[in-house]
Image (cartoon, rainbow, N blue to C red; front, side):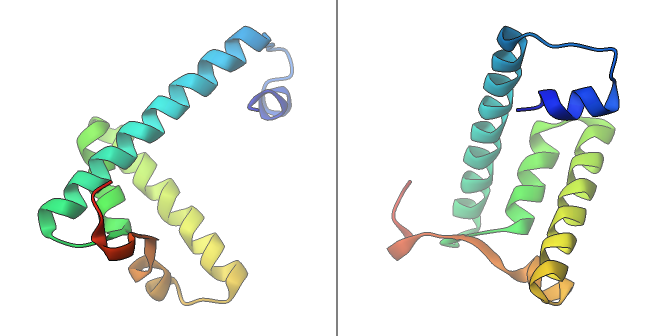
Length: 107
């Protein structure tokens, strides 16, 4: 839940449980739209594997102006931290396949 982070960043702010539920629903909807758009981009190219470039492209399509640049930058930072924690090369992690569709079935 986002409440603990909110308390650390802005101690004077509060958020009700109903507000937390709304934020949770909005983020869930955004994730579904992002995944669906990334899947469509992957299918247009003719691949069966969702890659980082598909997610970056979907982010650019769904978010406007500087917001998509910020989102892609944060995503790359997270991928770099994850690669470092597993001892992987960052370039290999960027080329890695996030989701493997078995037999390229339609989702």
